[in-house]
Image 1: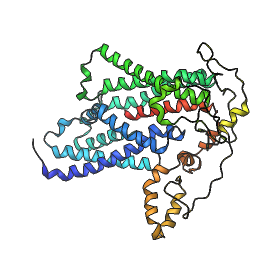
Image 2 (image 1 turned 30 degrees about the horizontal axis):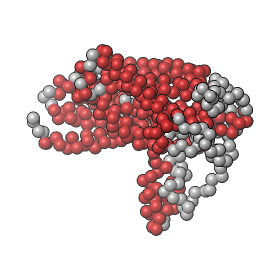
Image 3 (image 1 turned 135 degrees about the vertical axis):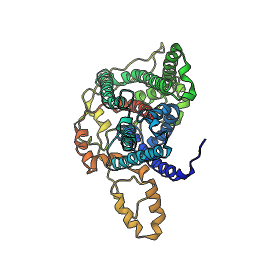
Image 4 (image 1 turned 30 degrees about the vertical axis):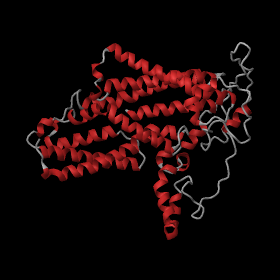
Length: 432
């Protein structure tokens, strides 16, 4: 193979901007996929970043090859560079520079943009400059298909998500037995999520996996089989924990009991200690979002189950709806927070935009420089996204508090079940 060492500098510059492009892809795509999970308190910031790192890697390894091939060979005609390999290198380097600079600007101002479309535009622009517009694949097998996806994907995504939300809204959230219905629906959503994930891996997986050799029956069987196994595992290990925590207010179950979750199917409900005052079974998903004065939707009824009867079956208690009781789940006095200053800030302090003023004060104190370095390095992990949503003065964040205040509030125990499902689907989105 011919080694063109005289062009090593082009390769080096391209690699640097490829790193910048990848950095911004993480910043932008991860935010697109996990923003709703973090903003709704389904995941903490550090949890989202950990999951994002794993899913980005798996997505690139398992299903990234076909997208890479499309970007590499189906936008511009590489045969036009047969006599000029350096020209191809410069063209791709310019595409990376254009894409990475645009993504940096978009990420800085908080614009959710498509990283795939950014590099596509970069390749088209540099390709036209290098070999002319006639060497760009404008037809359906090239640029036109990409443009069509800009319109087809939002429409299909909106239709599917709208239908799913209506099912959840009228089948779960606004039903009297909403908690019971949520527990029934959860394994179905797990099945659908993992089936779709498997389908995409089978259809778009790396050629090294040799999945194209599978027969139609094997493909369908693997898709449905993985979804079914995921649902069975959910029912064995996670569902009993949800039932015990949400139906019986068992606040003593730690998260690391998931591997032995099946044992809670057989444990007695009589030894569950009373819920201590001030202790909550689930996260208050409405806290800090203008929810303090928002009345709870009258449809939020709480399900509860009595102890097992003589036949071993679970029987329902007579339900009583007390709007004041449900309102306590999502309305509580805002805690009085101690003002954070340069004297009491620590590396575990929740970060806000106002912390940057404290950095200037710490910079004037050499003894505080180690703390300042720690605060700078951990700023992203500690940042309070919810606070930024409400108090960020940017144009993109305008009106968020009012939107939250106008939103309907539902049983937070039901929200807790869907928080797990939301995290799973966010991982699936980022994977692809």
